[in-house]
Each structure stands twice: as C-alpha cells, then as structure tokens.
Amino acid sequence: MKPRVLVSRAVFPEVIARLAGHFEVDDNQADVILGVDGLKARLAGKAGALTAATDPLTADVIAAAPSLKALCNFAVGYNNIDLAACTRAGVMATNTPGVLDDTTADLAWALLMASARRLPAAERWLRNGEWKGWEFVQWLGTDVHHATLGILGMGRIGQTVARRAWGFDMKVLYHKRTPLPAEQEAACRASWVDKETLLRESDFLVLLLPYSPATHHIIGAAELALMKPTAHLINVARGGIVDDEALIAALRGGRLAGAGMDVFEGEPKLNPGFLGLDNVALTPHIGSSSRSTRMAMAMTAADNLIAALGGQRPPNLLNPEVFK
Ligand code: GLV
Image (cartoon, rainbow, N blue to C red):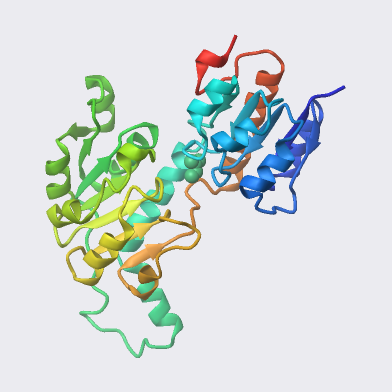
C-alpha cells in the first residue's frame, strides 16, 4: 500500500500527478484554509505532507499526527513550522531554497522602482481621470541610479538583489551578523557595514531576513528614525520584521519618503493605515509568484517528500539530526 500524504493547499495538477506516482494523495485543490484544527484532522494517518507558509504547523498539530515522518514546505521560509517539535517527534522538515531567488529579487526591484517613482499613486490618479495636462513639476520621484542600496540580510536573495544594482550604477551596502567571505562580497560588489550605518546611509533599504523572535520588529520606530527622510524601505521577506504601525506613522509624518511592501503583520489582514497612504506600494505576498518559480518550488517540495518517505535524505532537510 502506498503511503498517504496530504497536500495542504491548491497546487498545479502536475505536482499532484507526480506525487500520485508514489503516494495516495489527499489534496486540497479547493484551497480551503485548514488552520490548526483542519490540519490536525487531515494529517491523521498521513506519512507526510506538502505544506505552505500559511499552515500553522505547531507542536500541537505535529503531536496530533504520530504517523507523520516528513513535512515539506513549498516555501523558503519555514517560520510556520515548529522545527524543535518536528525534531522531538522525529519528523523531517524541508524547505525550497534557491529556486525562488531570482523571482523574489525581481519583485524587490519592482517594489523599489514603484516606490521611487510613485507608480501606484500616479496610476490611481490617472485612472481616476485626474490627469488634466502634462506639467513640468508633476509626480516628481526619486532617482534610483547612482543612489545607495542597502540590504539587511545578505543570503542568496540579498546577493541576487545586489547584483541587479550594477545596471543602476548604485553603491551597495549590506549588513548581516557575519560578513560574507571576501570573494562572495566582491562578486556582489557590496560592502559590509554595521546596522546603524546601513540605516543612516541607505537611499533604498531592502529587508531580506528570515522571521524569528530575534528579527521581530527589527525595523521599528527607533530604526526608522535613523533613516534618511528621503529613503524608501522595501520588505519582501516576512511580516513582523517591520513594526507596521511605526512604518505607517513614519510614512504619514514624512519621516520616510516611501515603502514597498509585499508582506505584512497579520496578513492577509494588513494594517488599514497602509491603505490611506499614497507613498507605499503594496502587493499581496507574491515575491516568488511566477508560474515557473512556483512550479519549481512545488516540485522541489515533492522531491523532498519522495526522498524522505523513500528512505533517502531529502535534499533540503532542515533538521538533519532526525535523518537516520
Ligand atoms: C515565501 O514567502 C517563501 O518563504 O517562500
């Protein structure tokens, strides 16, 4: 008998077909949000699951599924999974690093450009029929070229964002706890600075940190106060890294020129304060959302699940101590 697995959210039919070659698949192509109770019910009797960043895979959920051997997130972030609880229960957890770097870096740039040149507000104005004639001093934005790009969190996606800055002749600064090895830093043409210098000198600050208790509100009122009033903040990482209330106050009070936000505290119920602001570009957590990248992410998660339940070490194992 094939092992039984859950696919917790709607995915491409090709992914279900691939899994069906190995497993008895309980899919959720209707895309009902399962939540804690739904996950507990649907994980019962399952050997593994393909899961999304929106699934709360808490200690409670994991304890309720004693047959579980692998949870394979189709996301690079895995703050939705209680990794320690997985390890205690002998459950392998995996993510999808690498395949989404370019697509996510592209969105960071899209938001950066949109915020710099005020695209969302200008477009709304045009659609509302408010454009009565061209004016010389109309919709003045901020130059991206030759500006200073700051990157907080310089993993794979941060480095990909940095390389895209070359075409704009930008100075690139970054901060992470441990500076990159010299040759990797040179390959990005980026310089390490301390966090305060990064905040003070960036014209555009892109956040690319994983969310954890240590990064909760790493950008709050005090950090925003250090930034230039002409600067723009871009978050394509995770909600909760930024104190959204403090950001809204800074944008409203003219203490920050603009922001580009793909992720929010409490999403999808984002702080309504964002909606009344013209100096913020908003997207609904679509960083990795191109067809080919989402397919690659789902297939990577499927590879991990097939390996894990087939007795092989999954390629993207997050808790190697569980693999025997
Ligand atoms: C998306 O947010 C991801 O972590 O892949």
